[in-house]
Image (tube, rainbow, N blue to C red; front, top):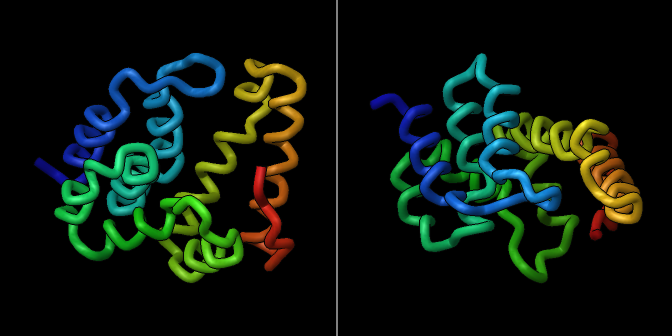
Length: 147
């Protein structure tokens, strides 16, 4: 089985039954992020795995089995409770693979089609959050990207 198929299988197992803020199956988001980077099998594998450890740390060993290049990129994309956003975004920025997947993740999360499924207050908060994240990743700041 190729790396993309293995990553997709793990993502489906890890996110089984999980829903997003709009009540849609969470794996739909993961699949869209993977499709956005599907011209590169390594980036696509990272995209399938990008939220696995953050949402389901019990799969950490499974992600590590993909090897350093993929598992390090997934780790860069994994938020840790209490971690300073500065360190999170610096880790993502320093790895071109992590950065590419994160930008695809932000593009999907901030799409108006997706945001329109949410309440006005939540959609507004998320627009602001993702605009700040995009700025931190592409322009070097600001670092306060909580929310």
